[in-house]
Image (cartoon, rainbow, N blue to C red; front, side):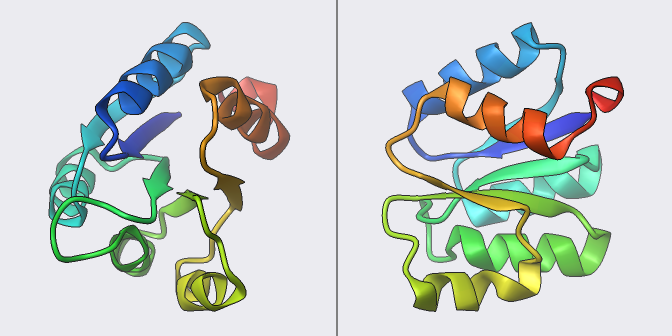
Length: 122
């Protein structure tokens, strides 16, 4: 399992990367913008994406997630401080795995991964 972390809060991204590595997950990369996420996904082909909704740059995380799901079939766990029904509807074409409310701790993501992924696939 290789996970792409798309998060513009450096400390949170770093903590999440360390927690995921410690749990045995591979990291496909860290991105702070939609454009960087797409570039990394093209070269690294992650299994799953942890996608912040608000990113650095002009494009939102939802836009990148839709593109990556359309092109590669890669699904995302979305992180947002405000996951309104309108936002969830906008993200529907990305076929989200789940939504995490921000602020979150790395262990919140770990719990979601444990629910979504059989232990043998980690």
